[in-house]
Amino acid sequence: QVQLAESGGGLVQPGGSLRLSCAASGITFRDYDMGWYRQAPGKQRELVASITSAGSTRYLDSVKGRFTISRNNVENTVTLQMNTLKPEDTAAYYCNARGLAIGSVYWGQGTQVTVSS
Image (cartoon, rainbow, N blue to C red; front, top):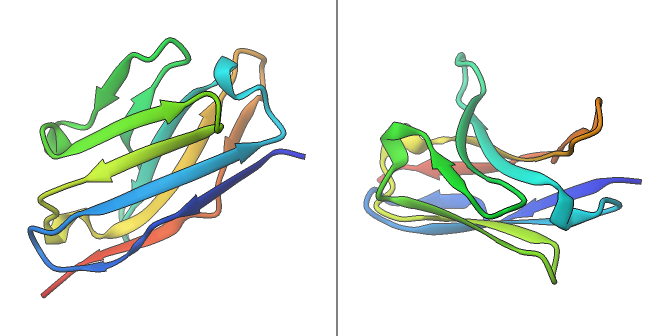
């Protein structure tokens, strides 16, 4: 059974930092591209950052220079370091795993990030 377990969300003031982690089980982690998505109320889910199985990264323009995605293929984790947080970063953040086989896409349950003074 595939599980993606997110942790690290919470309430932070503008300008603060949070570190989100996603622990994967039930998949051959090193073979999967991993990503973090977010969804704010009334908005579509959007890709925030992704990292391929080879380690290539991609970021949403609005988070470039502030967020960093990384992965640990020994511990089967993917991490999103978020710095200089803004109120517009407030959303539910979801971990995503995408494999090569058709249908091998998995989601975590999500973790809430709220940026507010």
